[in-house]
Length: 240
Image 1 (cartoon, rainbow, N blue to C red):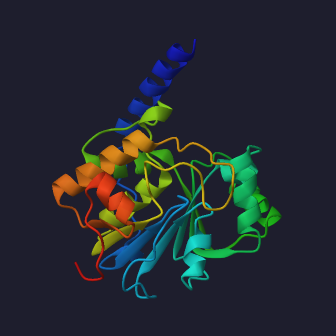
Image 2 (spheres, one colour):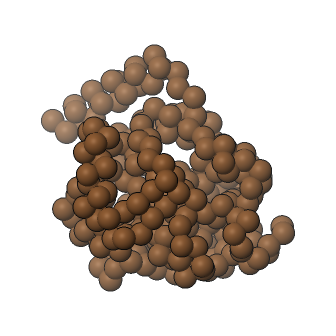
């Protein structure tokens, strides 16, 4: 039954995508800038030479990492829809950590309800933003296709990319000068903001995507030596 449901989802999403012919998701505020994408792996390093001239993209609750670097409010935050109303451990921990925090642009991915319901949900944990956007699936599929050359319909969980890697793709497609990842380690378990040691569900696709970016010579670097060793991405030196 589940397999039949997946087949139907693939057919529907494929038809919808190719009928809509969406443009890839971009954010032109990232154009020409050095961008740091901050993930929530338990270990991360501040990029060499980091200052406020860099744009910062945080994922879910990973802005607590950037806060230690002096970033009170990330330029952009990508948040999964489940973090707003979800009842699992990760969602509850994200809301706990983000209570009272703020961001510049907030993109909530795949939110399927009204914007007023989204605002109410964010208000319940007092999370503030300058701009609020709902990032729908089709522009995200187009973004992945633009960077990887493949159409990922996001039906199979094992084939999905993490939002950290999606943030890297967003920066690249938006014309960033360089993209430095910190706290994005496909081989790691757990999150910096809790002690649950939860499995990372996108390790395989993330690793493949990062290695593909390296093979293509895209300007993607890492601030974390362990990630440089695992992926082959060059270690950021501040200039590169």
